Image (cartoon, helix red, strand yellow):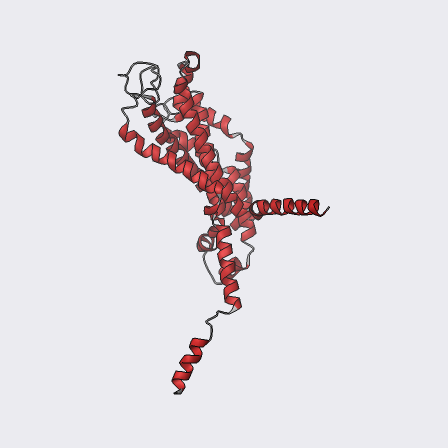
Length: 326
């Protein structure tokens, strides 16, 4: 038998094992990936199902429903096969209004959340990275906005504008809801700017914009996502509150304007529960879905929240073991 054949036989007989360090590293990476991604979290799954269902309803339902402003239907009809959610005092189909109102509320929430997160990036991340007098100036504006109550300020601004579109309402809600997120981002950025890899990028001659975009922003993505979702929740609830008080959009239909119409039309006194309960349920479900996703992301950001269930189970197990031993 030749040397080549001996080599082949020895290679076949020996088990193909990987070094223990490689296996340990792969295991640690897998565990880290499982801890970082919230996809397996029940909170995230339930929240995502709720939010996606409402988004699909807002996209698909208006295609198959009648004109939400049509008054050709009889007034205050209860739910029936012809009108799944009944009609309003003016004969508007409630299912059609609920569907088009979902689009309006979601647009207000996303636009206001986008404006708020952009302002929080400017006043939070820039202030935390630049430091010095520039941080003090940006922090002063942030603290002033934190002190000013948001909803009363929105009410004052909206009351001075007689014709209000949903874009204007979203803009007002966005510029009044960024301060809290900016404060948190500024503190986190101040902590990140002292890390070794940020110092290495500065020493290498990288520009400040690239250091922020490449070195700091990826570490802030979970926090930014959580702040964005919170801003959407605040905007949707704020718009519903403004519309209920008669300060919401004039030319658009949202869940808040439906509640305002139901209140002015005395839906509760007339027993027309189908006029105000469906939009209230939709607001509650969307807020609950976004809040559950936010909680799942918080567990990724905060290790104490992530490890709390395991710690509680260990405590219960230890108590049971102690009780059996006694």
